[in-house]
Image (tube, rainbow, N blue to C red; front, top):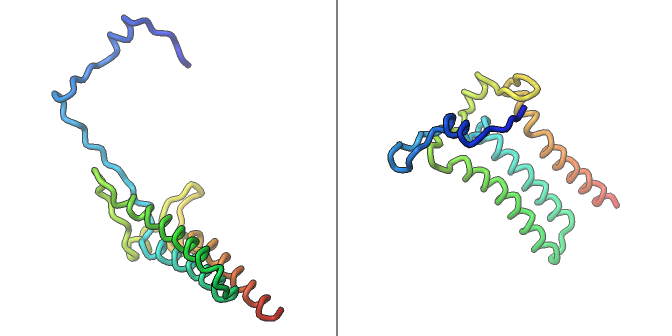
Length: 143
């Protein structure tokens, strides 16, 4: 609940810090997503495979530029996230190795997941999208 404080009450509660006199507190920042790099590479690969299937199925020179733009968006989105994890200052964390991930698993809001469960959860959407692209390719092939 909020309450109104007078200037005098605020002065008694406040602690003034003079710039330059006090050292900056080191804050540890965790920019790691808690998953090994292989899962991100697999996700990017599956999205790019979908784009490749669509390029192959609908082979048309006019679709070259949009295909390059789509692939560029995928690479930029995941590349930016990769750069963000390496950003400084005070970023002491590194992505888990595959063996660490297999041994520890990962904590999520819905509970603890083993490495296999987490990998399935991360890769489900890209696999479904690629499967959808392959289904479209089969339909186009028989149409």
